Amino acid sequence: MVGDIAEAVGAVAVVVSLLFLARQTGKLRQQTEITNLIGRYQALNAASERYDHAISLIITHPELRPYLLEGKPLPPDDPNRDRALLVADIMAGAIDHANRVAKRFPDPAHDLGWQRIAVVAARRPVFRELLAAMPYSFPDFMGAVAAAEPGSNP
Image 1: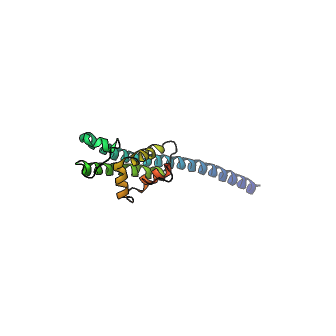
Image 2 (image 1 turned 180 degrees about the horizontal axis):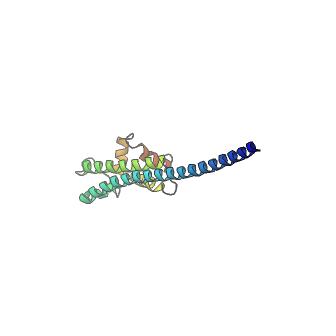
Image 3 (image 1 turned 135 degrees about the vertical axis):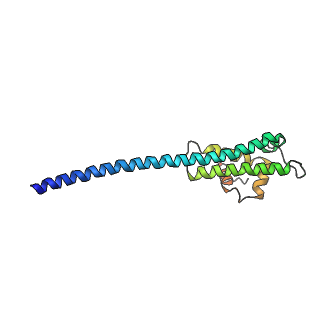
């Protein structure tokens, strides 16, 4: 009789322990999701800051705007050529980084923004030239373009 009571108490204790463990596991899952989200936002913020830095260079040198933001061709003898390619490199690095983060930590509700920026940028001659000269420097930029426009080669 005492043995049966002890077994019943033991079984109840096991069930309570399992319920407590399930609750703790759920809380741990939530904490992990929050931590991953914070990391994602910090990484995307870093990409935004890099992109904003390039925009500030365009503000400082407004003669670069037509090449970087409006798609004006960049002739080989253009006096703005080197500066435009360097700013495009900074922007491409930011776009590449943001698309890498989006691929590594997917968030379907928000991922397409940087992919769209990649597609638009890849249509501009200065970025096409940069990507053609350094195709392995921006794999996630190029991957985002390829995913959005299958068969394209920026």
